Amino acid sequence: MARPPDRRQAAHNAAADQADQPGDPAEPPQPPAPPASTRQPAPSPGPRPRAATDRRSSQRDALSSLVPLLDRWQSVLEFATCGLALAAMLALFIINRTLPRYVDEADNLLGGELIAHGYRLYGDFFSHHMPLPYYVMAAANLVGANSLTAYRLFFSILITAVFGMAMFSFRKRLPVLFLAGLVFTIGLVHPIFLGYMVLADHLFAFALVILLLFLLAHGDVSF
Image (cartoon, rainbow, N blue to C red):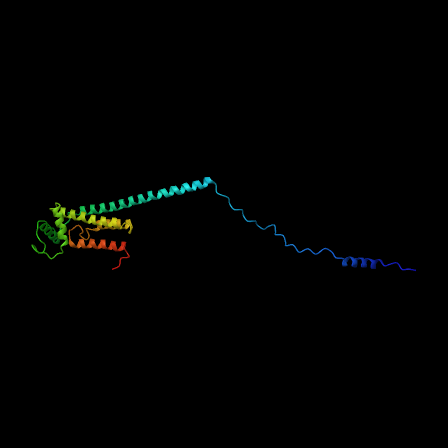
């Protein structure tokens, strides 16, 4: 009598036959999908509104038009500051023009008057002083000065004019407030060093101040 086939063996054989048959080729692995939280690049901003661009352009034009006006007002203020300092200096010199005299000042005034009338310094009259004060007073005599106060007034105007030229020459290189303060201080304290007198010492001292300002204004000067 024949033995019925084993069901387990039949199922095993069917599975082995199916595995031996060629199947579909394996697909390559796919890259992982990017996470959802990855940020996308921000879109580039578009062109600015024309109204905002025009407004900014008009503001720049307005500011650029103010620059020449500000420069002009700065020059006016500088001139005004220098003028006020010089006026104060001259006024202080004039107020003190009647203070006591000194013998050397009288010698300078007399020598200047002699030179104005044709006398020769060191030839027609003797002096042991330097010539500059005599010729300055000779110029004062030629414009009409004939008294102590008139000579001192001429001397005050001369000193103020010299410092005025120095201020306007150096105002681009030195602070205007510094120059104005210096001039006003000289006018304020000149009675302490008898600056109202027509003396050679004062001419030399004021010349040294001008020289110092020149050196400060031109620091690259080489000797």
